[in-house]
Length: 394
Image (cartoon, rainbow, N blue to C red; front, side):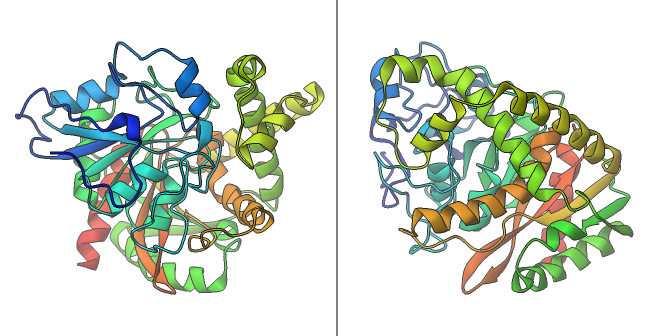
């Protein structure tokens, strides 16, 4: 039976049901797929009417779909994404803004906006997104659900539209940490049993970058995780260089985005929406010297983050600087908030580490997320810690 999409979460060309088996670890569960991933015999739109019109219908699905279907889950449709996935707001100039079920007057966050909304609104049990600069983690925080950015390269991205390949990852949303774990068992390459976390790092400078109200609301969950693990330590992650880390992300992402999509943009001349248009225009004229300098800085960032995150250590940080902005917030105001968000979100992006956002608090009756970041390939460990926190809070 077709989904009753009251949230504008699903794309019109992606209303389809696919199920290959009713047996497996995900049997009886439904999921949605961000319209950035290929599904056999269904168009991929990538949030762009011109992309939809200029690309052939794929003949094979991305491997993650096959893994989920083979595990017994049913695919019930494809979901909206921000245009070419280059936004964090969830507002698409061509297709509108999915409703944030947890805060209907506010944006859902992007670019995996439709997947987050469909999950938060219980239209599906879980949903697939992609995360380059925060496109799963931020909407998870805004919509009050769990969402993970996986270790870079751990889940194949074949059949996905590229944005910035050295940052692009697969992620997913669910309403319970237990389901996050079960999906991970199916999707993660070389999935294993979780290992015990032995130490928690509190990212003092990242907590210092958010409003005091947010810090205070997240603190009880921070304390619970510290109690669960035992050993903890406060660390200054970026040594006052968060702005530089954000700018480095901007430059490297922009260079990769233009390399991935520049030829198509020049040939097609798509009518890009606000924000996306300006970012691609700036990417087209980046100074090679600036790119080289940013790539060098990124190497030092990676070394710093990986030096902190050993296999049995996790880091806690705010997912977002605050609650979801109101719908139709002026672009200039959104740009400031977006910059603050990227300072938090770029850390795991640079380092290729996994990060899960947990819906632990509410401010002004809107969700706010706390994140657990782990070392590379420690996805299972941070998901299990999310389960343990949920049990401790129950």
